[in-house]
Image 1 (cartoon, rainbow, N blue to C red):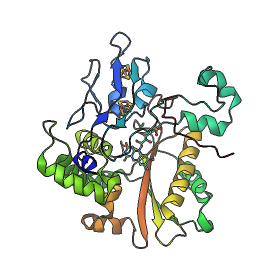
Image 2 (image 1 turned 120 degrees about the vertical axis):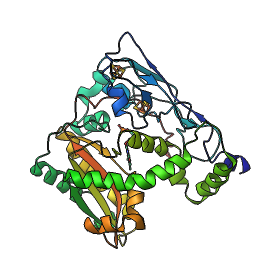
Image 3 (image 1 turned 90 degrees about the vertical axis):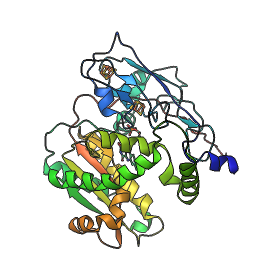
Image 4 (image 1 turned 45 degrees about the vertical axis):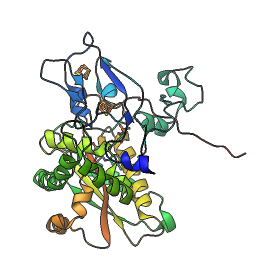
Length: 335
Ligand SMILES: Cc1cc2nc3c(=O)[nH]c(=O)nc-3n(C[C@H](O)[C@H](O)[C@H](O)COP(=O)(O)O)c2cc1C
Ligand code: SF4
Ligand code: SF4
């Protein structure tokens, strides 16, 4: 327990090792732009460098998106994000593997087996979070189809404990980002260490905070906050459409779960239409605070509704989707 407490702020982490092959790299900067954690430094015309900051040796959460978007296959990655000491959740099994739905243990590549898969499976395996959007608007009819896919999601007691707010007004999205960043910036500046050292004040503060709300104190989102801040408050990546998923707190059983299932119906439907999506939850906590009460009112959000997450939607800029490796969680079969 004492060890967990000691590790609550900047726990000991094992991080993936990324390598950029300078010979292969076309210096396009797509890896830099797409990385959720600002894990590369890049200057126009130069090869990106994998980096860390703020107490992180490397800023990488293992999503594989930089590899998926790279047009020249210049990036390789070994290892896995894991927490060595402390109580946050790292990858548990650390057996990183591409999709293996046929259970072939890697004897065939995904390309060789994809013909045997259903369209739904292919969508699930190739979808990646999209953070590079074209300026092109999304037709209203397609947004309607996405919302309808959410409406027909399963929910406990068929209660459908959700509502949606669709924002296409770019000024409103920008204002939302600006307002949310005020709180996020405060949090991440406090969390991220300037010299990579653990200060006593932060150690005590984060030890207590991590025991009170472990989900909110996990180190990973703080690097995403840094990216949003460095990239001019861009929490929504200039996406033309943002759908806020609101839960009705009166819902049967677990409305957060229902809202998540509903959101994933929308994400997979948008993906099947050739649209790119990214869940964006970072601004949800600021949105729930008194600081944003006026903005909430303008969006028509009032009790018993509360924003659970949001989805940025738009046309992808270049190739985003692709196969990545994932940890292989333990499965127990009780026969
Ligand atoms: C509930 C939820 C919230 C998320 N919030 C954010 C976010 O605020 N910003 C962001 O860039 N990505 C966010 N993501 C995207 C994850 O980082 C991404 O799903 C993960 O790294 C795996 O990558 P993939 O979606 O390409 O498979 C979120 C994902 C989920 C499911
Ligand atoms: S794997 Fe994901 S988090 Fe890591 S560097 Fe690539 S894009 Fe960034
Ligand atoms: S995406 Fe690939 S080619 Fe483009 S800068 Fe990054 S490593 Fe180089």
